[in-house]
Length: 199
Image 1 (tube, rainbow, N blue to C red):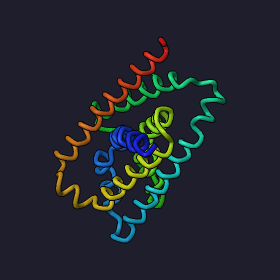
Image 2: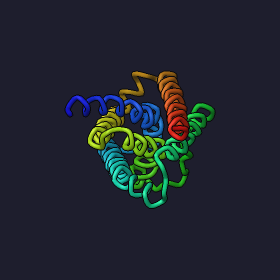
Image 3: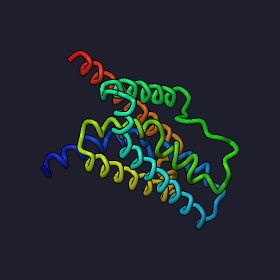
Image 4: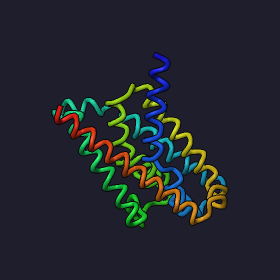
């Protein structure tokens, strides 16, 4: 039982890490909080993490119910989710943007939108969570999600130091590598879904 939990934990942490892409999001965090005070920036990041936490756990909780209500099979969602992740990964590789940021976001709402969602927990993370929930134990998926949120929180809390360490080329390279890995995971999900269809 414990061995199975740690196995599920190990194999679910990596896809969520790639989908969340905390280092790739870091430039957005720096840009959106650059004019904030030392006291305001941690508060905005805390709001972002709480929003991401609520979104992720909510999706884990209602995912199976939505499947049942709509008559969706796991294989259908694996293919659809894989295609979505692949599109997001290709978009990021081609344009350098995972999502379009609104220019008119209110200052007080930055932590919720766009940082909490869709940047930290957006389509890529939600799709990955639902797919992992169908393949591995829910406790392991929840812990994997929390670990990735904690890592993102540490990265964002140390945003200025991390940016100085990696510099702009390093941030860009890390983000591109993450997008390539996300594309590979998307192709794997599509492949598994098609194989399950044929069984």
